[in-house]
Length: 295
Image (cartoon, rainbow, N blue to C red; front, side, top):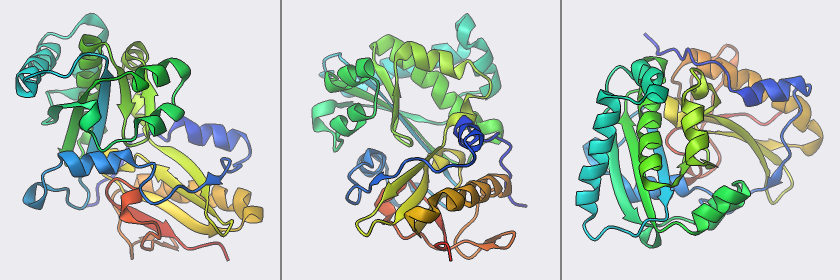
């Protein structure tokens, strides 16, 4: 039986549809991996071999960037942080009681602490996409706390909800900002805590984006699908003049993919044959399926 996603479509899809399905503004495509700190971080933290992700696995990586001085004993700090997480799940504060109830038990995520200066991570790229206050906090961060889940996606995205609860508790303790390294979005601690109190916050965990390659063609792609155990979707070779109409079809295929569940190149979504992605694997978090260029 194929896994089916029951998570509603993100708000971005509704906003774009309200604009008549217009494509997001295309920006120049960065060099391979240039704006993919998520993959660099996964390479740095992830154990390979049998513990690596398999087809259909979910990968969730959030970071709390804190002004606190890096601990002399990182492992001892991890013990303290895990204690904060366990206390939050066992006796949640009133504002997190409903999010914790939806999780139904602490997912098996891992907490890691690293000094920012030792990370293979371009904080400036994250700061450039953040609001001014959060950008300032990113640039001044000294310690990064990572919460990472790798495993099968749970019903109602409970694995992602659990990470959200943990990250919120840790951000409050470390007085840091929260970055989703799947979508590269950053929130203040208070904003993120308010965010996860909304029952459908997981519906906004994927972004649809566009870039322009050196030839001038437009590339449509998603970010964040790995958090749901689904492949990201891309379409390359789109003439700028056809971008608006092509993006409408890209949205429809993306919605069909989320309804269908996990898929791989060679599978069909209705009459659409999914292809291997053109971009390097460094450009997405785990798996990817592509659409043929428009004819």
